Image 1: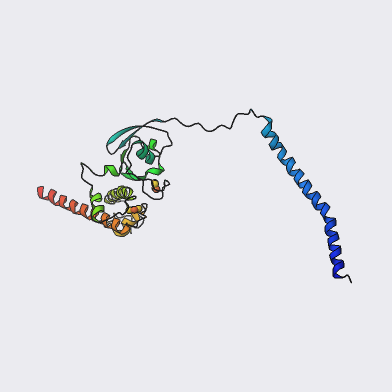
Image 2 (image 1 turned 135 degrees about the vertical axis):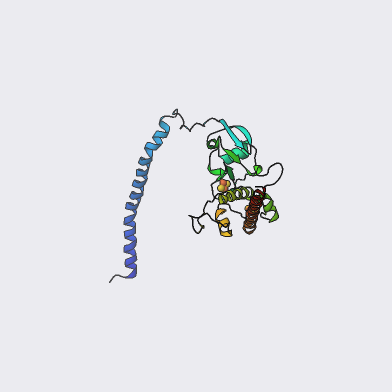
Amino acid sequence: MATRNECQDSGDEAAVLRQPSRRRFLQSAAAAATVGAAPHLHAQTQNPAAPPARTPEAVPPRPVALNVNGRAYALQLEPRVTLLDALREYAGLMGTKKGCDRGQCGACTVLANGRRINSCLTLAVMHEGETITTVEGLASNGALSPIQRAFIEHDAFQCGYCTPGQLCSATALLDEFRNGTASVVTADVRRRPIKLSDDEIRERMSGNICRCGAYANIVAAIRATHKGGAQNASVDAVTNRDNA
Ligand code: FES
Ligand code: FES
């Protein structure tokens, strides 16, 4: 029977015998790697006068006419400029805020022909000929709009960063509801929703995020504005009836 020392000796011997083949393997691997890299190195040094890779050329700015808050703006914009950047950086209307710049927060909401859109997701050149309304255009003749007044009365903002988008969105929401547009929480979409419930408001405002958590007061402000509008409508109806 082989002793422990004999086993160790024979193991050492085998290790010594294996060493050359391991060395040979490493040498051949290194050689193969060098050969593989050689054409690349060759290509790099072959033609030092080769022209640099071409970069896409910038598209020059072009005239873009925007109608914002009732005023005409003649801007020079590259076609890739978003409506949000056109408003803030070119037209100088800083009320519309850039939150995420990818359609997730609603801070950039403006109205295009009365319809709310995320201005970070659309190009300015696509809105020539439309009527754009930003938060700066909600007040008229120095008087705040009903929803703006309600936001103040109901303390519906804290830092105020999301507020311009919330105001534009709420303005469009009230119009959409008045026009009978249904939402996914409308119980029967074949019928015009009669009541603007808090669930309806929350669902219809779900694209506008508020990090401060002013949601409860935003809902209250919209609810109050809707009720005020309904009361005014009733008053108008009564007045018209009485004048008939
Ligand atoms: S900045 Fe447009 S959705 Fe957030
Ligand atoms: S009031 Fe601060 S994010 Fe809405």
